[in-house]
Length: 431
View 1 (cartoon, helix red, strand yellow):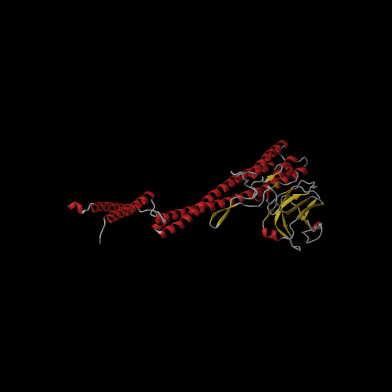
View 2 (cartoon, one colour):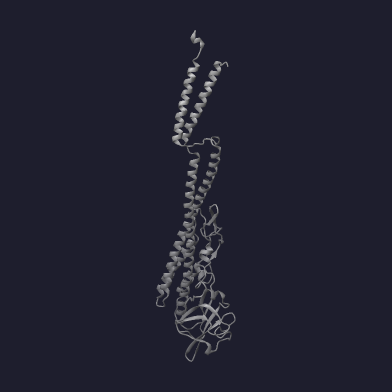
C-alpha cells in the first residue's frame, strides 16, 4: 500500500483532532459537573433524567403553592385570633352587665365599649389580603362583604352580606386541593342563636320579675326527634300558689295533659324559682320529650309567659348589637329589670355561640395549615430524593473524570509526538 505524504498529514491531523475533542469533552464534564453533556452521551440516562427533572419541577411548583396557601391561611388565622379576643372581651362585658345594680353611667360605659368592639369586628370581617382581596368575601373577593350600622341592628335588622359562600382553593399536591379562605357567611353570619338548639324569650306583656336563662339540651337525639319544638311556659296564680303549664305554641294545647287546652289547675306543675323546668311529659299521652330543660328565676306574675323556639341563624354583629340595645334601654321598673336580665342572659348565650363558631373555624384553619406543613415536609423529602436520583444519573464522577482526562491528555501528547516523528520521515534526508 502506497502512503502519500498527504495521507500521513491527514491521518495525523484527524487523530490529533479526535484526541483533542475527547480531551475537551472530559474538560467540559469537569467544568460543568455533568456527565451527560448531550442526550447522545447516554440516551437511557438522559431520558430518565428528563422524567425525574419534570417530576421535581412539579414538586417545586406545589411547594410554591403550599407557601402561598400557608400565607393566606396564616393571614386568616391572625384575623380570627383577633376576632376571638374581641368576643372574649364582649363576653366579659356581658357578664359585668348582668346585674341590675349597675348605674346608668356604668351601663353606658359598657355599651360604648361594645360599640367600639362592633366596629372592630366589622373591620376584621371586611379585611383584605396583600393583593387587595377581601379575606372573608368568598369568591366575590373584590366586593366589601359586610355592610350595615349597629343602630339598624339594634332596631331588629340584620347585617348585609354582599359576598357569597365560596371557598377559594389551591392545589397543593397531585391529588389535594385545599381551601385557603372561609366565607364570611360561615364565620360571622350563619351562627345559631340561643344554646344552639333553641332560643328562649319572654312575652312583652310580662309584669313579674321572673327571668329566664338560655336553657340546655342533655339529650340531642330526643330534641331532634321531637315533633314539638316551640313551647310556651304559661304561669297561673291560684290561692297564692304559682303554677305553670307547658303549651305547644303551634296548637295551643297543653303538653302536660296530652292535649287539653289549657291544663286544669291540678294538672299544672308547681313553680319553684330557679328550679329547672324539665321539658318532658310525666305519665301522659301523647308523651313528649325535648331532651332538655330551662330555668326561670324570680317571681312570676299571673299570665306571664316565656317561650322557646328552635335556634335560627344570627350574625355576631346582631348579637353584639342586641347587647348594646339592652344596655342602652336599661330598666326603670322591677319588670323592666327582669327583661333586662333576660336580654343579657340571651346575649351571653349568643356571644358564646359566636365565640364557639370562630374557634371552630380557627381550628379548621389550623388543621389545614398542619396538613400543608405535612405536605411541605413530604415535598422536601421528595425533592431531595429526586435531586439525588438526578445526581446519580447525570453528575460527573470527579475521580473517574480526572483519571480519564489524564489518560486523554497522555493519548493526545502521544498522538502529537508520533505525528511529529512521522511527518519528519523523508528519503531526501538520506541523500
